[in-house]
Image 1 (spheres, helix red, strand yellow):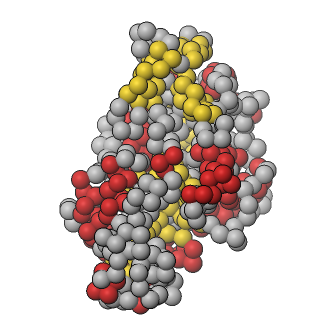
Image 2 (image 1 turned 180 degrees about the horizontal axis):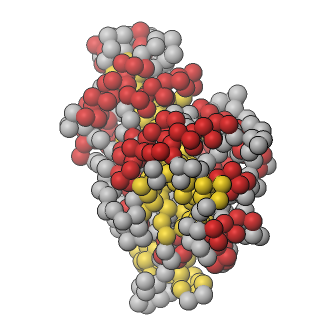
Image 3 (image 1 turned 120 degrees about the horizontal axis):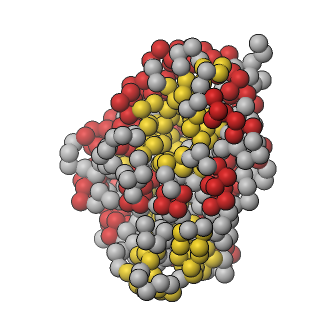
Length: 537
């Protein structure tokens, strides 16, 4: 029998069913196969976008050969559900012989050690934990999932509240569930398991263009500058991000010549400190700590440990730690060990994500092995990266490349905004790939607003899982949720800082459910809608 695919890259060539859908980053429509009759929708006009296949040790699905079933998945990304450890070895051999690289591994929460073994045997595949029937601690679930090789989880509908979904998505974990379309979609889940595929697609097509179900994760790049009020990569700026209710704050960490971990982005002190130019990693901590910042003379350079200890009091603001030693100094191992020690010392912020990129790519696998409970992201940008894809094939090329770069790591993708777009995001979501972009189009000067502001609006409207920006002050004021009232169409708008406002919203009836949409207008005239949960549910 010939291989199922000619190459691993060929396995990514799937004409995934994508109806005209006005919802930005709509939840995927997922079918779970429990019997042979459930296979029929795979060849229908409206196939599922993801399909859960329960695989036996003899490599059958609902009595049919796995080879034949996967051959039907030309328009769906398969989720390979493993119920027995005896399935791991034959499945790994099957995937190797048939060049299967575009699939998701899954196992139940009680059998997460099986998922870990399967992931080690098939490191290019992403992982998923099935938590149905369980009540996991949401705060601990990201670490448990990532340690097993999973970047997504299946939750019971009653567990998948809007707060729980957002909390997991903050830590780069996608959430899928099964139940009513309206309730689950508007809670922001990434996927809905259903046998009513036509009903799901019809539901998603009923909303106006630019509708958003999920809360946007807004991340402060190098901390929150607030139009220059705070200096980058300082305790002050990261605490400011927490106090302004960002969904996370990114920092850069380097080592000094005497191996003190400091929060610093640049390779040298030029333009940031009032001194002769000095290379950061060739300078002692004593010397660097004696310097003062040009525009913030009360600020110097902060220790990584001091920042992490200070952020202990802000557990709802994850710290995104970019492990950023220069490749010249080869200190990834030491900095990783220091990060692991801080995350375990009980005195530091534990709600964190690790980031690595550039020439340190192989180090990402090392970090995952050394800190297996830490969600990770592969950072990529610059002139050598292709421009944003314009076709499905180009988008899948990029996804294939990311799968290779993150092989062996439960990691998301952290590219520059000009390198990807909404098209890429649509194809990435079917692979449960967490996409959190970074934008630098304003970093040279706030005066760049008129030239580059529209590109930031476009990034904000593309529905990425998260957005790391230097100018979050322009986006903090948008509401994050809409709550219907008894005096509809008057609704309550909820904001990041906890305050609420009342506003008149558009009423939308979809079959027997009523939703309310609030229209936000961005800076250059584009707009989008935030959707409420169904009224009365």
